Length: 365
Ligand code: NAD
Ligand code: DAU
Image 1 (tube, rainbow, N blue to C red):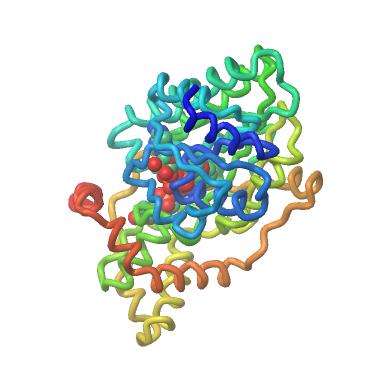
Image 2: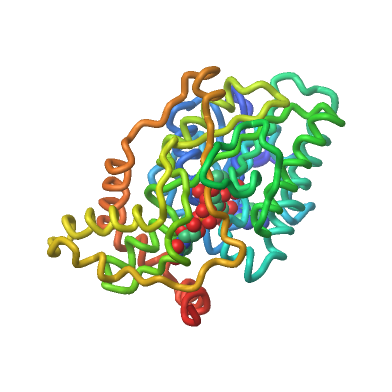
């Protein structure tokens, strides 16, 4: 080992634990990284991210200089790169968020979803298994998943931890598949693993291909706001920092082998949500009430569009005392304020690639 490597090793050794967070440059990942770097100075946080179109290190500009934070540009599909990462650090915990996450992209091109979400997860599981051998004490593989693995609800009922998997899109099928692999490694090889399945997140730093930031951006620029079908699909919205606080609790107190549902208990029909957003934007932009609503444009529906998601998060609430904080309108307002104040961030992520993607998604609708 050279002198530099030795110095680097000594630095790593002084931390109580080294934790790998994958996908930390993305929307939710960046909020999780920030929370862990700031709240746990005695953990070394390693953020491994490929920096796809959705990964943006600007999201972490405020913590990048912290001593207990390191970034490693890594593609989790690249088995050798993952093995190298696990040779460099001795991870006690893994919080796995890296994924292809957009349903519409999974419909036009499912392959990347299979590579990253399934093969990437298996590469991480294998590396954890090889690195941890039989010394599994104090180790945890925490897999971040979605409520979409449960499929679609009718007008009644909620998803619980016991709901059978019934994924309907290539995205949700790839996430369901990765959840099954995590459970199989827990059952077969005794890898200590937990999974959480969360509902729709919103908040700062979300890439503007997802409904809320896309609508904010279009309203701001007086462009049509595309609403799929009749706008009657229902989602259960959770502020991203509430997801990060749930992840923190589950990472520290979750029981290996268990699954936890996370949700906002906050169901909204898409069209009602967009109308509320238009009302907030009219106020923020000094427009006449009703002006932004005129931008609402009904477009061709998403193929196989899930009707309704609703999460029962009572297990997490009872066992760990977790609860979501901001009221939806307050959270939405904070989100609008963030996007209006961060014009540069928005301009940077809306690159040539985004414009091409947007045109291909919405031009024929
Ligand atoms: P995102 O698309 O904003 O970010 C994904 C991150 O993963 C990006 O930084 C990207 O660069 C990285 N990444 C993608 N492929 C990679 C690869 N091959 N190797 C390494 N890094 C790679 O996603 P998000 O919305 O922040 O979602 C994060 C996780 O949470 C995902 O696993 C998603 O399934 C899950 N989830 C999301 C929501 C939601 O509403 N956004 C809800 C529930 C669960
Ligand atoms: O439920 C959790 C999931 O939520 C996560 O696992 C996914 O990663 C995340 O992308 C999200 O999936 P959705 O498909 O629900 O989110 P999206 O923002 O793409 O769409 C929300 C709803 O709005 C959905 O019913 C489709 C609709 N929609 C979406 C877009 C982008 C529109 O009507 N118009 C649009 O332009």
